[in-house]
Amino acid sequence: MPKVGWPELIVVLVIVLLVFGVGRISKIAGEMGEGIRAFRDGLTGEKSDEKKSEELDSSEKNDQ
Image (cartoon, rainbow, N blue to C red; front, side, top):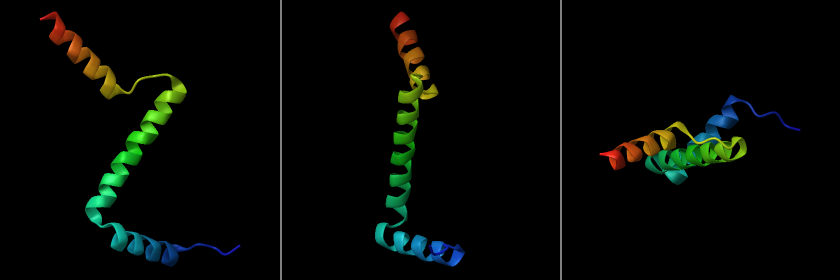
């Protein structure tokens, strides 16, 4: 099996950058992060900190 070194990785990253562009790559990375976070929360059964804080904010608004 061939070894993958730094030069090969750099070529792949340049090709990906040319195909998708910088803006689209950041959007894809953000969506992947959200997906991984949702998957992890689904496995553990816990909610993320953002969802917990949103629930607290909404309950405080309802109390007022």
